[in-house]
Image (tube, rainbow, N blue to C red; front, side, top):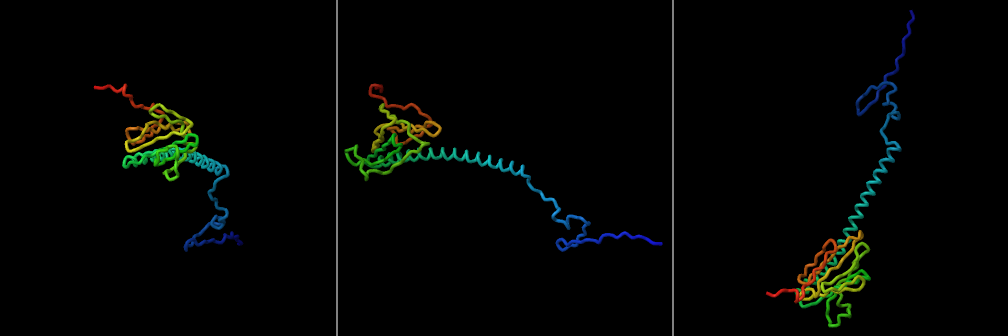
Length: 211
């Protein structure tokens, strides 16, 4: 009797890390190009990139705001430190100093007074100079004797006994927020105050009661 024997496909083997592994015919082990690999679609990639761009934009906006505030504070603090340095040096010596603030040029100059002619500024008298930027400008200056200016030069003089006049220098930042640098003729300390407070003027002899 004649019989039919079905032929079985040959066994296929693959060595993986030194171990013989038997695989079924048609398995992806022998067709690695048919194996599915995870990947982003174009739409998913666009969404991720858009989200990252938004995060970068927000971070830059916050950073620029911090830098602007830092720049304003730095410029005002440099100005205050210069005035305090002049007051401290005058208190320890018989030297006199003058801080000249030019509102038109938005600049300041500290010099040592060495002659009786206060209108002339000698090169050897100049100690330091500074400039204010667009985000830190002087709005106006008021003295405690009633003088006021918003366009000319203003001068604060200090000697061994302290400041000749007190007053306030009002700065404006980029957001139009005012800050006042307060100068007190009774103390060498210079204060920075948020806002534009009223200036305390010294009392006259008629206003001081006698006991």
